[in-house]
Length: 74
Image (cartoon, rainbow, N blue to C red):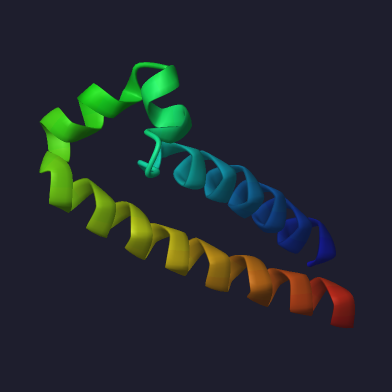
């Protein structure tokens, strides 16, 4: 059980880092530095990408906190 929870926690961490880096910041952030800004705009539109990525960030943050708490208890 602990190994599965640890794997889920690490996977959530990696996904959370990736989603946060893909978000467009005020100064274009890292999403534009690696060429991902144009692809996100073309795929989701300017407003859709921000909404989708912010919701995904919220979900991943909640999963991260839950797995952190469960790992601390176990």
